[in-house]
Length: 442
Image (tube, rainbow, N blue to C red; front, side, top):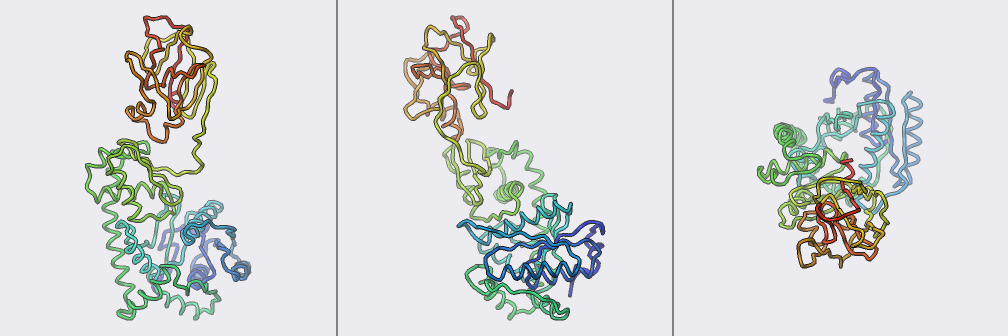
């Protein structure tokens, strides 16, 4: 088989480092475990995930546990107890890699070995073509993948086929278990494996080599484009915000790869495709200043005027109404308001009040749909909603933005944005001074 003979030297892995091997008990991973046993002297960690979807899972886990005990291999396992209604294969993959990461951390290892082979590579490339991707995605996967400077994934079987692995197992009398769900065409990968790959191999028995050449060529192109993107990123992506003015000046190819680069730099082990990128472009190119879309895994893409922000919702947004009596100071989310004794400036971050013109006590509350403010130096009223729009307050921040009101619920001040006719000028009487700043300014 076309596999590296001296693993340590070929991959430049320190012999003192523990090596984690992802093992399902199937033919591929059992062959890899056996191969590593006989070709390296490193401490081996067998990392097994029981997906708990088949009744045979317990039997397979027990066999693997006994195998590791017999061959002096450390055995680490976890059982997944539940799944949500989302894509099962995507969830299973995310849970696997999460456990791999935990195991690597536990043994202070930076080397994860997986049994992906050339048939897997062909399937992955075809799936990417069907779903759409960037150049990196169309290349499938690499023999060595650096995962965000945390660890490396090594795939020593990338140049051999499934048939080669079955022959290896037969030659060395290796016991393995077949997952019967791999025979069902309910998953796209199985359909490709049983139909397209079979036809391609009938046409050319060495078709896997052509796919490897194709993959390597795309990897070269991707490396070049990635360098270009890395040079541009600092000028368009600042403080986790994508500057859309600068971004829109770039060629579409670079724009697309910038979006992929940002997504993968933030969210490890999550798969993105061209549909997701097209959705992001749809809000970038929309004339509306505030838009939000959701991607899988609770990823939120927010357009806030000339910025694009990519976040992940780890908890529910709290948009509950509040009304709190103001005494000396108060913190609301990132907003901080305090009572001070004196200050010279009188911009919109300062509110000076004459207690004779209002009714105490003062309160801080969030807005409601009918709110308006009587602005200074005007004869009319302005809706709070319109002031937020004119001031370019992001959509999701408006519901919780603090407003200063008196005991009659008159809006006296929209901190940082606008003051009402009840606010005093420097040359007028005032006995209350309030100062606003954002929390990070403190």
